[in-house]
Length: 205
Image (cartoon, rainbow, N blue to C red; front, side):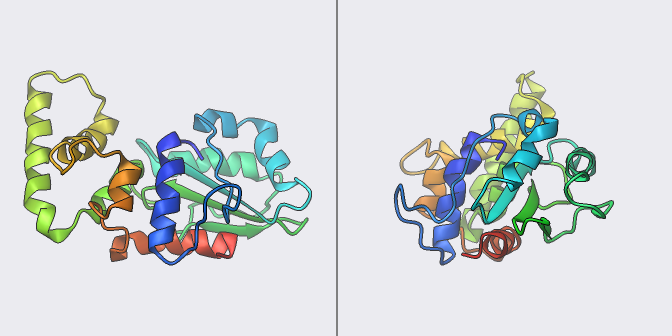
């Protein structure tokens, strides 16, 4: 997993969708944070991950950032030696493959394997309908800040909007996993289903 935030959000997202997720050391899936996609794209990283004795499944979750297709091309290049015949385009429902050793392997490119973005671009789809007007106000605030030379990068625009909106909740400033846990963001909205289904199928939970 590329981001530390994703590591904390996913358990609450899955638990809200019917996956029992007890505390450590009894997690149904061990989530590791790699720090950056470049670390996982090291030539030996994927090879080693799928060959750990006794490991049943390996999943890779990365941000598309500016280009989901380009991110998939990077991952495909690294996976080709272990998984022949990968598609030129990652499936909309995420990638599922089985290694010759029997290890299940999957890839999900945030937010939806199609568009540019990151975790926040998935989570914005979980904003409840009755909070839509307030979120639109947050978007306008971020646009105004941009017009006053706010220095955040274009790829982080959704992140800026999300954290602005969260600053107006009760209590203010919830972290993303807390917003999912406490249903400030609704993890059961249909928009979460593609990722949830990919995760459940891959890890058999």
